[in-house]
Length: 284
Ligand code: C2E
Ligand code: CA
Ligand code: CA
Ligand code: CA
Image 1 (cartoon, protein in one colour):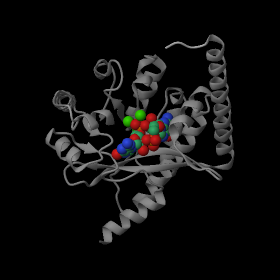
Image 2 (cartoon, protein in one colour; image 1 turned 120 degrees about the vertical axis):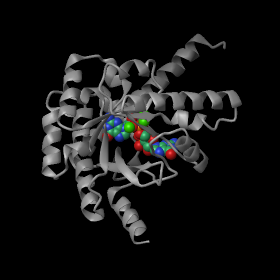
Image 3 (cartoon, helix red, strand yellow; image 1 turned 90 degrees about the vertical axis):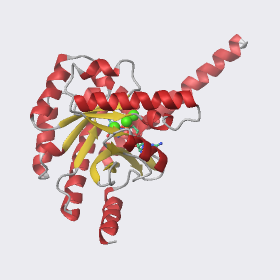
Image 4 (cartoon, helix red, strand yellow; image 1 turned 180 degrees about the vertical axis):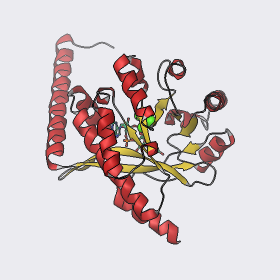
């Protein structure tokens, strides 16, 4: 592709400027959200593929902007990580998610459902275990009900301090889930070096098992089946992410996966909406 040097540079500068402006705006929203309490912990149920009973919930951050409404987390998380505000945001989400779990448990009577919370690398600071302990204590939640979701990015640091904090959380009773499994470079190599209890198969795999291309479909199924067998041998539970169709659900169940999460079952929702939904289905 040929491009005019001067115009090319000009376009590049404008794009960079736009990006900088929108990042500054997001950063301002994060700060305002922390001060004015705009952050919410939405919950998405995780169901047993056999019978579809709710096994747990994943907390998903939402910034509820008074003018713009709900803002999805991807950009907010990346700006929060770059500016280190993720620690404060994460603490707010942790406490709100735990409070929501306590409320849902109280109203629905579900005392064994777990709560999975996403953590960025920066959140693994020495104060984390005590803080989590304080939150679960305050809301009367057993630590065994908490699942700490980490990605390869956390493990990649291979930082002894992070390792110690994860071990401490596990000793406290929390379980560790490896998120987005299959999207990184060397996911398998972490399994023997790190205590993991749950593997979450990324939604790109869930899509691929029904891919139109025969070869892709077959290979994806073999990969997931192999990972599932391996995980079970290592006493790990396997969850499929992004389940959207009955066909996907059926195939995943046949392949031996334990749990599923996706729009087919439930969308991420405000805790109050979720409670209404659960109550309606209980009385139905
Ligand atoms: P994730 O941890 O992989 O979360 C699953 C994402 O898949 C969520 O996106 C969820 O809304 C979406 N999802 C669930 N079911 C389906 C489905 O059937 N189809 C499709 N297409 N998508 C589905 P969301 O809520 O936009 O979150 C995006 C990412 O932001 C999360 O990916 C996670 O990496 C990060 N994130 C969200 N909340 C937090 C948080 O509190 N702390 C941190 N550190 N990261 C968070
Ligand atoms: Ca997650
Ligand atoms: Ca994921
Ligand atoms: Ca993700």
